[in-house]
Length: 104
Image (cartoon, rainbow, N blue to C red; front, side, top):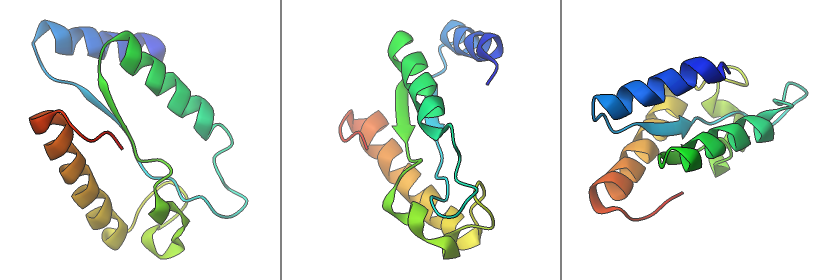
């Protein structure tokens, strides 16, 4: 993750009054290819969110991350998984951004 580029995106969004929401997408939890630095990545994204007063929707460890049938590989969801993820993300967006409630 390029911190300088990330900071530039955050600054640009603030300047243009664009509401930036950080999302950590699901990662398949099974098998030997499990992402070794997942916790570190989530921690870094969390720190950017706190530092810049941004919402971080962390979906990297949702219950369906253990369902192999929702993923093409460890990092990419298939059509069924993408529909489930999109539905969950839309629900959280609606509750967090429109009503300022419910953080996952």
